[in-house]
Length: 234
Length: 234
DNA sequence: GAAGTGGCTAGTGTCGACAGTTTGCGACAG
DNA sequence: CTGTCGCAAACTGTCGACACTAGCCACTTC
Image (cartoon, rainbow over all chains, first blue to last red; front, side, top):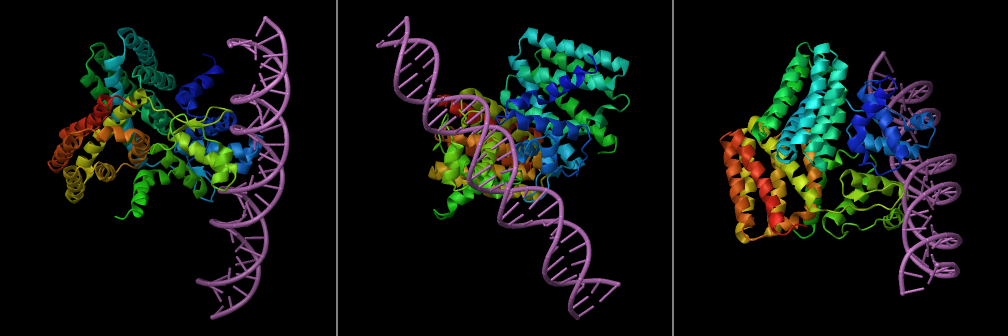
């Protein structure tokens, strides 16, 4: 991977499942992506006010597509639009983090159950490839690569669950979660735990043990939450 | 309840958790509600094309708020907006029904766990009031009243879980689900099963048995799905 | 000096209009 | 009679403009 196409790949991973949802013009979606990336990467901090006229100038377009983009951002809870007032980047508090992780834990447990029920042996074997990448990243201590390969692993997993609605909703939650991801993985020892969990998970898949897979998935997510908690919150 | 305020009450139950999400003008939200009700009640059948110009005329407004309303409808998966083509009411197929029920089952299981962990005894006791209404409706065989009291029960339950994100997402799923609700409850014997389940659920809450409550919740939802399946699908 | 009041500015929500695209219909060839 | 091409109507996406509201500052008043 070069430094050029890596960001594209990342964006791809973030927005794939959401693209289909957007039926409106691709112009609005482009603006939506641009701002969303700015938010999840922290360039636009929580509380930062966004000005539709200024955005329109910056993207050299009128305010109409910008407004639609803002609506899309609101749908993903990245922006809050008070009536008749300026939209602003939504704040992240510890309460919301907890809420999102609770939902994710439940839904990934469901994913695991569905994978066991519906994925073929070949498909499950395909997950081992991702797991291998994760192990390699962890032993290098490459937190960033680990994170993105982790996203890839989860995307692969979710698509094996063969539930499009679930995929869409998890993707939406994922976008939110990327805002505080740096807190979750940068703790010492965190990567090794995570690698061990992934290995247990793939083994549970191979054994077709739905209960175990669900439990591991759930604890994997909640371990991430507790890591943030231990790091002192957001 | 009179015949006048009943529809309002119903609309309230359907849209409460979504209203906060909408930051845009109340005009767009009003149009959104109007069309959404039309869709979930079947007046606008799947595949029906909606014309933004005509809607603008009907609500005596311009096309801009209508477009925003359509975006809101798309966010709830009630409408599909292909690029540069007319939006149309999204079709419901059995696959999607299954997908939604799977997610709902998981999330209501989570709700039950959270209720056990977080609700006070008094709050749990409050659920018994709803349960009483359900029993009464079932013995009268009043399917319609049963349905709406059921919605009330679930809303109460979800609010006891004290997870705002979860509430919003379940509300969104609920809107979808109302499109095929009539299939789920009108089967003979269905109501009695459902009443028994609710009783077991409230008892599990009172006993603070998280595992049992989650299991009952899950099976309660999936029983609804199997009822639709048995009725021959959508 | 503090509190209330009035105008001023920035910015949203809405509107009507226009360009580009899709769709439906009819003419025409095979 | 059937399938294809082309035109006209319809509709979407986008634009610039306007009214109206929220928030702010200076000014007045007690």
